[in-house]
Image (cartoon, rainbow, N blue to C red; front, side, top):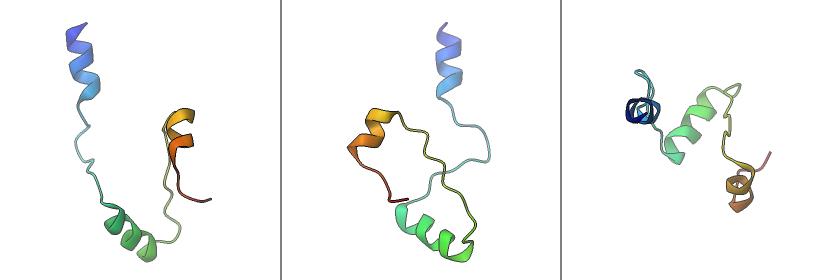
Amino acid sequence: MSFLSLFSCSAPQGLSSLSAQDFSELLRQKPDLILLDVRTPSEYAEGHLPN
């Protein structure tokens, strides 16, 4: 069970985090880019981007 927990917390290779500013710039360069919000409904209710 510990192994499963450890494995599920590690990010797959090739993924990285972006700051809001970096994502905004990327969105200007690629307007068809999609941001998929995978938060829970309660996390979404705390605050979200319009549209």
